[in-house]
Image (cartoon, rainbow, N blue to C red; front, side, top):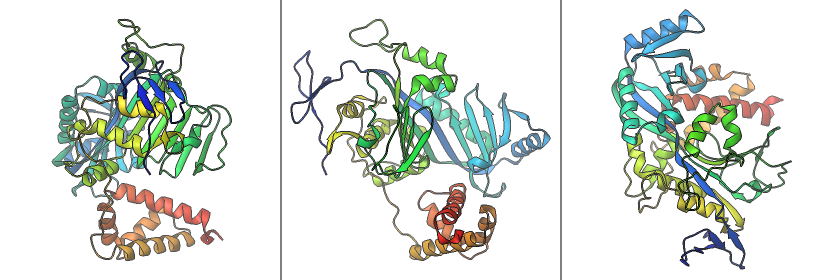
Length: 421
């Protein structure tokens, strides 16, 4: 199915193919001249590193964690609060919100003295904003080398965002959004509505947050950023950025209107999706670091907005989506590549058997009321473990995410199948 766009027309120059007047197949006219882009950039970076943990530094973290609930530790002269990182698949989290880094240390499912994916570093929007691309890359590597020996970058997750004013999603936005994602969430300020598929969905009031897809995949999120910045206490920071935005009519003054809502379209690429795209796109080198990703940010953005789109009517892209897809850039023009995700090819010959055995074991564990930790320990002793790990590693899914699959699988079987009886 070929997706079609409205014809674009620049009323000032008469040029076709550019401008903010969009003319539809039946002569419909939509003028987006009032839409102002206030900021475009990378909102979040999560860098994964493989290697061996330095035992001296790890011992300091363990001692601090065991010492007290409010434990802190100084690393490279910067103070971090030490907390449990179990929910993120790591043993420890070092966090300093003011500095802008969150560091997850020691993979929960790999021995501390064994090589593994022992480090994940998450950079905040402000930390990213204050640095050049090269500085982001270099500083993440420096932090990584401080924690690990034999360091190797193995993946990067990215959140790309654009903030704009002058257009708001209508009440039926979700019903006209085309996506492969099975999970859709609409939040209207009072409650969340989560549903699978879009048929029969009803939304009371105007949605404030639309989320398509899961966090461990490719996620598209459209939300009222001007409300979110008060919740996250970022108003002063974001308004200082928005106030730098100008257009031809307002120059040299800002085009930001503090009395109007600012909407953000955010595309969140899990590191697995970034790896799949780099492997599936002909002529593209692997993307394991920030500088690997930088030349492709615009291309990744366009790829996401083609496969997830807001339609005016069937097969016709809505003009606002065309504008956001084609007019937004992240420093580089999109390379002339056909971006495509690679689905992993079977590698060990018994993949179907491994998958079936895994599912059947989970059903047995669920029937016997095993919790996730008991199921995990039994899987390790089942004779399936090595093949199972290889099966998922080929799909860029590591132990911490595999544990989540076990947990989700047990829950699903208890709630939705006969094992609950």
